[in-house]
Image 1 (tube, helix red, strand yellow):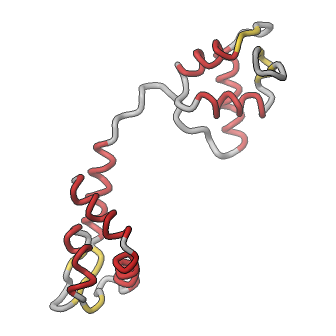
Image 2 (spheres, rainbow, N blue to C red):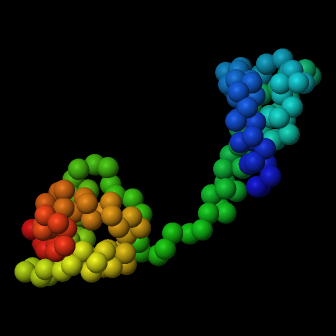
Image 3 (cartoon, rainbow, N blue to C red):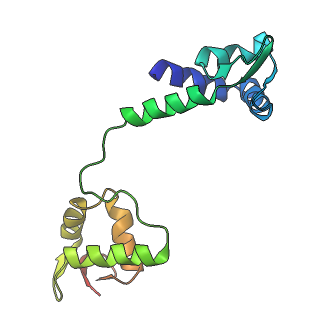
Length: 151
């Protein structure tokens, strides 16, 4: 999988090869007339098929297989940790409110280092989530960022 991925990325890093890939993609299911010189990198990467003599087309199945192999090779995310915040406002606020009440008790004030440690147990991107908690008014903080509390 890795050599094929490297070959595909090398082909797409080449301006002529990338333009050829776009041309072949736009050619549809029946493909376009092959050009041995221009198609060489893409054929080596295994992302082209030959629907008929003298024609090439994008091999959607090969690209899907490559994508599946890359996804399978990724390490799993840590169990129970939030890796992405919702984009829609209401779900975002729900997640942040829940995190806020898990992090701090009402009236409790803690140092930034402690907030970071508590967040690290629950989320992947500590600075981003901490910033969102403050920006959305879930947590309050000192101007210098030294102390945090439930707002």
